[in-house]
Image (tube, rainbow over all chains, first blue to last red; front, top):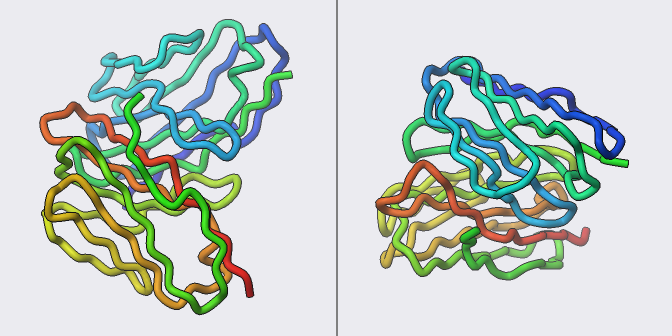
Length: 111
Length: 112
């Protein structure tokens, strides 16, 4: 069966510090991968998605970036965090346009 | 970005009551998904729909893919306290890329 992992689960970082969040998927090949951000009590905002290694589509201009160094690994990064980067970050995967499955999320607090 | 119109935004119901929520879009969708999210966790897929008119159940949950392909409905029968959470609809537009469009969520609270 397929599983999706995210780490860390929680993170507290000062403004201006770098960020690296990791997502890995097991049990499937060539998945489409997604990064979403969710503000408290709000909906899901798509940040990036990838249909293959090295292929990244950005949805929202910001100081975040994404990379896909391996088929089942998706990384969200920032060189300098802003207060507005705080939120709940969710990774998800899908195969074609059917079901999409989410990871457990990372709670990021920028202080 | 584009979002689906999901209603109601929130619901307070008594345990044992039935719940209905819906999502509408101006675009035609070829897939509808319904998720439940509990505090501090990722959304969990409840039901997936692929054909117009399709009616699918998962326990006490029933969802339908609207005939116009522009809407979907989720019903929860005989609600229980553990049904509390935020329910999201999501869809994949016809002719779109691999992006999913999400509703704004329905926050459900069940009073015992």
